[in-house]
Image 1 (cartoon, rainbow, N blue to C red):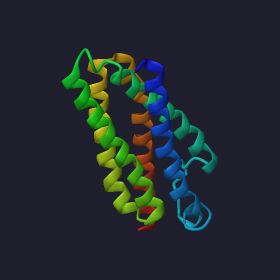
Image 2 (cartoon, helix red, strand yellow):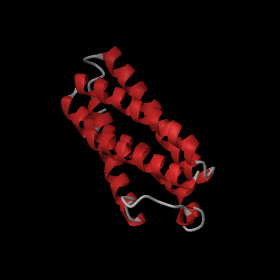
Image 3 (cartoon, one colour):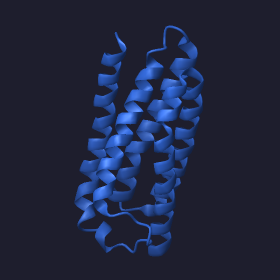
Length: 158
């Protein structure tokens, strides 16, 4: 399987996770979320979809670049892919916890675990393919910001 097919498969998977998060999020945006007290640095709602779309695309390219090295470094690539899958699952769970269950505290605990898993994934990816690791840096930064935002929303509404 060539690199472009791997990128296409990874794009479908990552964008499906993003779409699923959107399905869980959308009903709460105009009902529950709008009523929450938010910090002054909270971005407008329209910012989230394009940012997450770009991040999911970068994640897909990153994982495909690592996957493409599976024949050269089988065990390390398998471990890196496992970490990627775990962080992707945690990514999908966050929207359910925050918007589905409307539980910012539980979502905060989970997003800290998510950030740590993204960081571990970054460390594994950068050893296999530096470009793949670097493609995860915006994701790390955005989830770091989201963690502060999540904590602030929890604090302001506890």
